[in-house]
Image (cartoon, rainbow, N blue to C red):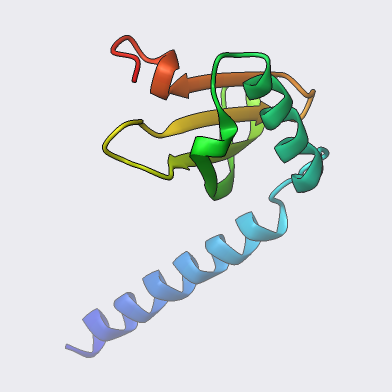
Length: 107
């Protein structure tokens, strides 16, 4: 029993160390959060979306094979009429929009 306990402690210690190391090496974003919001809203304003019908619900920093990006979720003020809109704002300033009117079903 002592051996199993020792093994479990070693596994947990190694896992905790791995988390700390990977967090230390996580790359800081090169595009500010504020700038990402400006870029997303500029892109949305170039479409038929009425931003007054949405509010910014969440923002997360994420990674993909295309690089690091800010992921913004806009929720509708009146959910029965509209769907959520998602904006991926990459560190180079490019913006991808999906959901809401950008999905195949539209509003």
